[in-house]
Length: 273
Image (cartoon, rainbow, N blue to C red; front, side, top):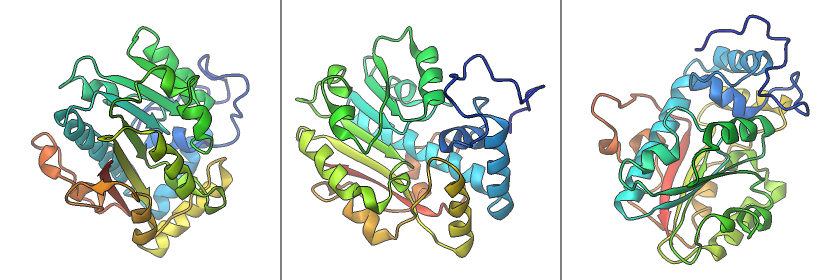
């Protein structure tokens, strides 16, 4: 994990004045798990509480990020050069645009998040990159996220696009009807587009107890069983090996010596429209 700031009570220059430093954020907790430095003491405290119940939480985050990298490599090999990463957090630790451009140097990426700290940081990191766009947007409002003032202003939706929903759908409660949100998104995509999902699932009581900690954040978690996650791919053809634990999805696409031997409490898949 990263080192602690000398005075955690002082607001960092990069943190917007509107951000509540006393309330943890899922995006910043995730950044901490990945070894990032863009988190506050309140985020680290929540992360440590979660790790008391589930010590492998940072490894699970790394396994999820490794799946993201493998899926992007798969997509660029299939010719996809447009991506929208929803719930992107802070694009550090080999972000989507860097991985995609290993194969397709001109790949265009939209990063979208509803956390103002993540958005502020992302814009600061990427302001000199004309092929990326950072949006403050919410998946629950797809008309804004995918509309002309959103992703459609940067990507060409008449051509295939990959929509990446990495560990974000479990922050959408059933009351917001995530299936309807995905149907709205699917209707906007050209044939040959892809949907990539990682979604948490409660394999044990410990996983559910850990998820319950997030009720203290603006982003409570809804863990779902396999069949409910599978329905999010309605209208898409699942790419083999289908919907599987993240570490089981095409591990051969990981660089040699980087595979993580860990069971993630969730499922991952890639679907083609």
